[in-house]
Length: 251
Length: 265
Ligand SMILES: Nc1ncnc2c1ncn2[C@@H]1O[C@H](COP(=O)(O)OP(=O)(O)OP(=O)(O)O)[C@@H](O)[C@H]1O
Ligand SMILES: [Mg+2]
Image (tube, rainbow over all chains, first blue to last red; front, side):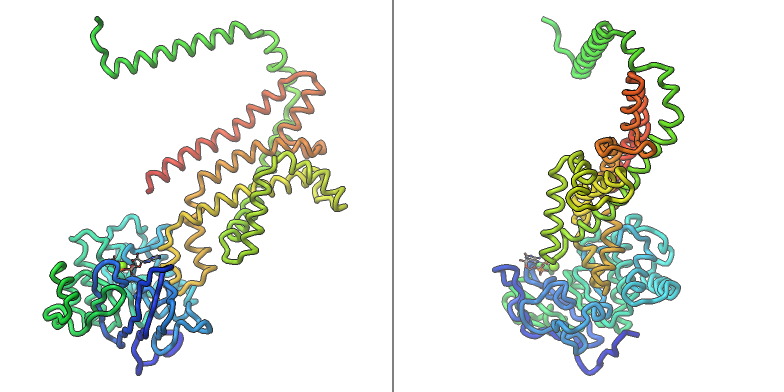
């Protein structure tokens, strides 16, 4: 139900020769990367390797320095293109949840539907309720974010992104800010999403999730993609020295 | 040698000594004051009775009315200036900065005087509403300069993740500002804004310089006029009491809001 008919014959996300610098600090050094439609790609790598920067370039929260980024066949670095409309098709979930603290859960979920998708309030609320149920929080519709646990907040954030009916979801370490006992609930929601066929790009330190849910694992280090492939290959039988060194530290 | 005192005992002794000093000071002042002169000059019941009901129906009413107009005007103009100052468009930023620095740097009294007398001479334009109108425009302009800086600080205090979340959902910058950033910014700056309001209440007393028509007088102008006609200062005391009745609840509110905000973090 997205605005422009998404093309199904192209990758959901295709990044070519992406460079990104902050001042003199070159963080991405020529990244080639793609996510096929319906695919779950997990991006792993040491801190500072540029994982978040890559993910944030995909919906242009970060301005790339050079290179192309295609989303469903549309070059989103083209200034003629309506970036806001493309963003409604790309759900994003942040490490720090970033719920709107002055709005209750339902209004968190309906705000952008009404403002960006021009949905009627009643329709937006119906969609919000459906997505809240999907993340198991239908009883929290009128709660405010501060009244929820971190895990509940993150599930609300996922429901908020889903309420826009995105074609794909970007996750930036969605469980890293959570107490260990709350991680499971969020991962369960993400697993269900993957099972339902959602296209997902997940930056994560959860190797168990990558192994179980990922169709492909991409290992980044120093601003380049070092190695990628099936989870059992990359995680179980890494080919590169840097991958081995990283995995020996986290596994 | 005396045994060392416990800390709590020492503290109680210090506090006791302070109370004694304070009571002594009050006693000296009371003893030195000329009570009959004070009573007849500042607390003359006949003069006080004469001040009513106009001191309420005209003077206090106008003080509240002028404060409300200047505050609402200052908020709107201040919001526009704050957005200009944060705008990516350079000339907007320059204009807002120049305006803010100019009117924060000038005494409010001088600005009111300027609008009441200099502007009509220089531009042949009389602000609507006579002297009161001219003075109010000046108050709006001065308060907007302060309020703009307050609102800007509030906008900048909203975490950048809020804007990123709204933008990633496809919300345009204007809607992001209106429904995500500003509501949070105003919540953050409610205590300082209430302070601006209290300052504004007191600044309406500067309007006397514009020379107000009889029915336009606010508390201070009204009291000063009455002091000269009755040769008695009682109206000033009444005005002072009325100012306190208006401002004290507000300053209490600020204290409460600040405590509440601190707990909320
Ligand atoms: N806005 C910014 N301004 C300047 N430098 C930045 C900015 N954002 C990121 N960087 C730098 O870019 C590099 C890569 O950061 P990035 O957040 O992409 O790493 P990451 O792989 O996500 O790391 P982590 O696992 O710690 O989240 C880091 O050196 C960081 O300091
Ligand atoms: Mg990161």
